[in-house]
Length: 88
Image (tube, rainbow, N blue to C red):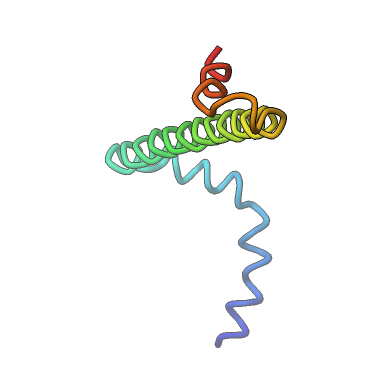
């Protein structure tokens, strides 16, 4: 019985894309609303991911700049003056 189910998997996967669209279009209004909510939250989540990535990239760049300047002037300038040059 289990082997018969595995034989059907390639047959079911052949028309998966069109069957999925048919299922969405044939779904009721509540199911469509749930799918829309899931899509909105998914897009919102990806927006957060990309925003955090850009913030972390900027932090890494600022950190590298700070350590490069701090390495050049370890004894000549206090750290507060180094922070002021990064803000500009």
